[in-house]
Each structure stands twice: as structure tokens, then as C-alpha cells.
Amino acid sequence: MQTQQQPDIIADLLNRIRAIESKYTLLAEQLLVINENMIVSYKDLTKEAKVTNSDIKEIKQDLFNVKETIKHLAKETDMFARKEEVKVLEKYINLWNPMEFITAEELNKILDERLKTKKAGDAVGKKRGSRKSR
Image 1 (cartoon, rainbow, N blue to C red):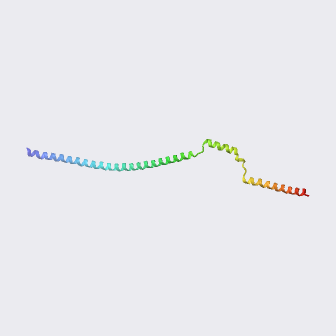
Image 2: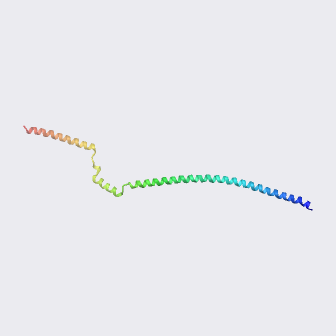
Image 3: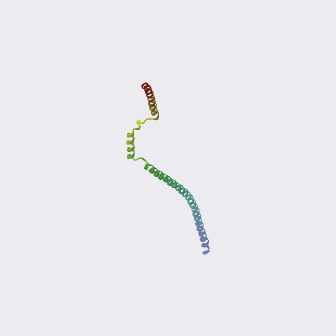
């Protein structure tokens, strides 16, 4: 009876070994697919991390530039005239009234006219003086 059971036991063991081998092969294939997917995911994540890091660097540079511009503008606004200073200048301008200033051309015309009148007056005075000495 043992001799008849042994081939059945061996056949049963072989079937079990084949089932385990097929499960092992299936698990190995699944593990290979999972590893390949993990590698692809890792590469994608690495690329995204690099892009994100470069974006962060660019944003930091832009932020630095904005800060520098704001500092520059703050320095420039310190150099602006204050309201009180403008009022003082306005008082002086109104006092001097530059709209009534004379141009160089107008001054030359006035001087020419005065020189002509003076020459004419001198010429008349010379005539009178020569008449009086007689």
C-alpha cells in the first residue's frame, strides 16, 4: 500500500511545487513591474523637484530685485522736496515775479533806445552850448 501512495504523494508534491513556482514567477514579474514603475516615478519626481527648485531660485531672485527697487525708491523719495519747502519756493517765486523779468533782447532794445535818446540829447546840448558861447 505504501508503494501505491508514494507516487500519489510525489505527484501531489510536484503539483504543489509547480503551483508555488508559478506563484513565485508571478510575484517576480509583479515585483519587476513595480520596480520599473518606481524607477519611472522616481525620475519624474526628480525632474519635478529640479523644476521646483529652479522656480524657487527664480522667485527668490525676483523678490530680491523687488526689494532692491523698493529700497532705491525709498532713497529717492527721501530726496523729494517737502511740502513746506515747496511753499517757501512758491513765496519767493511770487515775490520775485519772474513773469515780469526782461529778456536779453528786450534789454538790448531799451538800451539802444536810451543810447539814441542820449545821443540825440547830447547833439541838441552841443548845439545849444555852441550858441551860448557866442
